[in-house]
Structure formats: C-alpha cells, structure tokens
Image 1 (cartoon, rainbow, N blue to C red):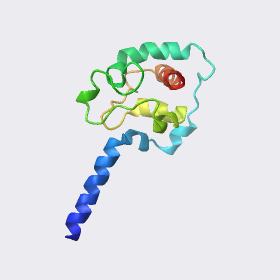
Image 2: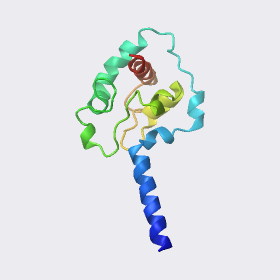
Image 3: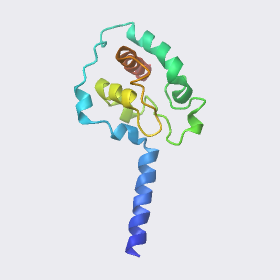
Image 4: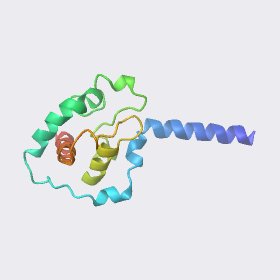
Length: 130
C-alpha cells in the first residue's frame, strides 16, 4: 500500500511540474550572471520581432501567450511571456533558455547567433510591457 501511495504522489508531482512548464525551473543560477548587451538598444526589439516571426511565432503565438498554431501539438504548453515565472526571470536566464531549450522547446544556440538571441530577449521584454 505504501509503495502504491508513493507512486501516486510521484505521478501527481510529475504531472503538476509538466503543467507548470518546468523549462522555467531548470535554468541554472549562473545564467543570471549573463549581461544583456542590448538593454539600451532601441532597435533590438524590432530585430527580435523579425527573428520571433521566423522561429518562435508558431508555438508562442502573436502576443507570446503560448497559443500559436502549433502549440496544441506540443506536449508541454509553450510559455506565456507574461506569466510571472517568465517575466520574473533575468535577461541572462531568458538568453540561456532560448539557447538551450528544454522539455519540448528546441535549443536555438546552433540555429541563431548570440545577437539574435539577445534581440529575442529584448522583444520578449517589449511584449511583456505591452
């Protein structure tokens, strides 16, 4: 009986964490030390919007809500940029997350340049403030 109970608790915990988009929970603390070189670049969000439309929009949707046309096909719900877990992350953590991916999100460090990833971070910040 005890083994069944522990198995049930483990299953509930796993399902809960998956529903909370554990990508946000697995970013290493060192990522917070990464410094965004584009915080004062007013054109970075515009460049980031172009990259976003090419590689992020299909999952994250028009307003970063995680409801893009392919979102329903993904096991782990794409992040909503306005979710406090996302909005509360440092720029470095977002850079790490985009670079390395997690759960069902692919890593973009080999597909995008570091500059493009930082531009995406700046675009995400713009969306969060709209």
